[in-house]
Image (cartoon, rainbow, N blue to C red; front, side, top):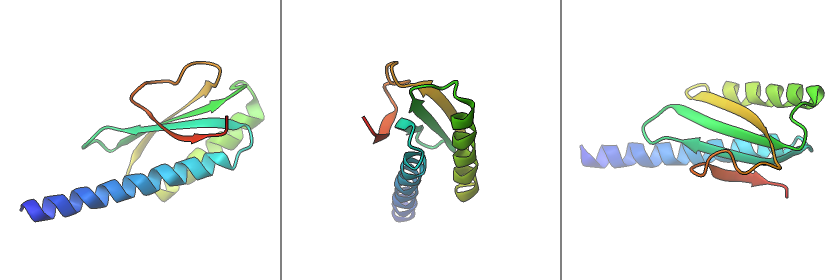
Length: 104
């Protein structure tokens, strides 16, 4: 029924918004994280997350980011995630991605 579809769609949008906020606040707790972008294709269960830092080769930083990724996956296990870390001096990873957090 149309009413049920609309309710389900609204619930999904609320969940996705909560997920985006959770991702942004989670990575914002890591001081070296400068930007976070997210995207989700309509109807898909994959959430794309790009984390921008100055030095992606910093091993300790990467381990802290990986720990945060595990926490996010644990909270939102109904989604599949595609995480990536990129150097912030580069352009945003993909123009279709939404800026969820920016420190700079």
